[in-house]
Amino acid sequence: MRGVAIVSPVRTAVGNFGGTLRDVSAADLGSLVIKEVLERTGLDALKVDDVILGHGYPNGENPSMGRLASLKAGLPIEVPGYQLDRRCSSGLQAILNAAMLVQTENADVVIAGGVESMSNAEFYSNESRWGARFGSVTLHDRLARARETIAPEDRFGVIEGMIGTAENLAKQYEVSRQEQDEYSLRSHQRAVSAVESGKFASQVVPVPIPQRRGDPVIFDKDEGPRADSSLEALTRLRPIMSDGTVTAGNASSQNDAASVCMVVAEDKLEELGLTATHVGCEHGVCGICNVLVDGRAVRSCLMLAVQADGHDLTTIEGLANGDVLHPMQQAFHECHALQCGYCTPGMVMAAVSLLDEVPNPTEADVREGLEGNLCRCTGYHNIVRAVLQAAGDRS
Image (tube, rainbow, N blue to C red; front, side, top):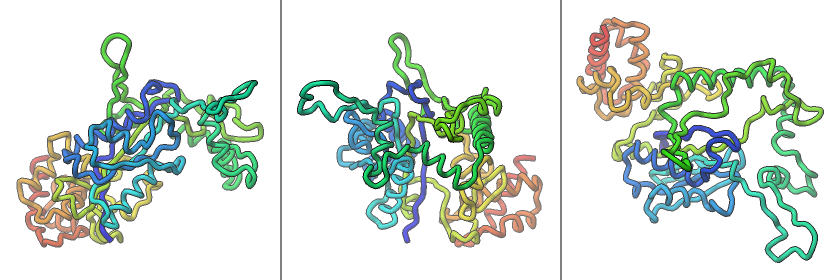
C-alpha cells in the first residue's frame, strides 16, 4: 500500500467559548492555518489535490468549510474542498479521508484538519420561512439542539448529549469524581507548563484580532488552561447533572480554533521538497520512524499515542531552529551522510539521542549505537563520520 506522511501540522491557539476569537468566523480561522501550512512548506498551491475540513457546527454564513476556507486562503479555484461532520472526531476523520485518498492514488497532496467556532453557532427557527400564523416563534440554540437531535427520538428518547455520555462512561468504567478532578488538574498543569516553556510556539499560528482603534491584538496563547486551578476549587464545583460526577471543571470545554496538516504521498516527498517522519517496516526493526521522547530515540511505530501523554516529543521537523540546522543535521550535510535520504530522519534522531547518552563516543560506540537503524544504500561510513564530527563540535 502507498505510504502516507503527515507534514507541517499547525494550529491557532484555542479560544474560550465567547472569548477572544468570538468575532472571528470559522472560515477565517481555517484560512489562516491553510495559508500557514502552504507558507511553511513552500508548496505551490496548485499541487494541492483537495482540502478537507471537519466542522461539527456549520451555519449559513460558513457553508462547505473546506471549499470556503481554501478560497479565503487564496488557493486557486481549481483546488476542490469539502466539509465533513463526524461530531467530535470530525478533524481526525478529515485526516483519515485524506490518507485514504493518497493510499488509493487518488491524490498526492491533501490539506486536512478541523475548524470550529462554537461562539458563532447560530440560533435558528424552523417556523419562519413560510410565516408563523400567530403566537411565538421558537429559536433553537444550534449547540444544544444538535446534541438532542443527533439520534432519532422515537428510538432513543431525548438524549442528553455528551454530558450524558460522559456520565455513562464514568459508571461503566468506574471513574470516580475524584479521579476526574485529579486528571483535570494534571491536564491544566501540563498545558500551562507547555505554554510557559514555549513547547507550543512552533505549531501556533497567530490570529490578528481587529480593534476599533489602533493595531490588531495578536492572539497566540491558549485560553483554556488555568494556572490557578486547584483540586480544592475543582472539588467545590457542582455536577452538571443532579446525580452525576461531571462538572464544568473536569469536562471538555467549548472552544474556537482551527488546525490542519498536509497529508502527502511518501513517494512524492522528495519531488515536492517536503520533510516528514518516515514509515518503514512498521515492526520496530528499521529505525526509520525514530522520534525523541524525553530526549531518547523511540520507534514511533511501536508507541501508542496514549503512551506519549505527559512526555516531551521531538520529530525531525523540531530539531532545527528556524532556518538554522541542528548541529547533527549540519554534520550530516557536511559529511554527505546520506544517499537516498530515506533513513536519514531516523538516523539523525538516533544520533542525537546517542550523543546525549555518550557525549564523546568512539567509532565503535557510534556503530553500536546506530546498529538498530538500517541504511538500504549501505552509506554507514559517512553517517559514522558525521556523528563523530557532531560530537567533536560539541566538545
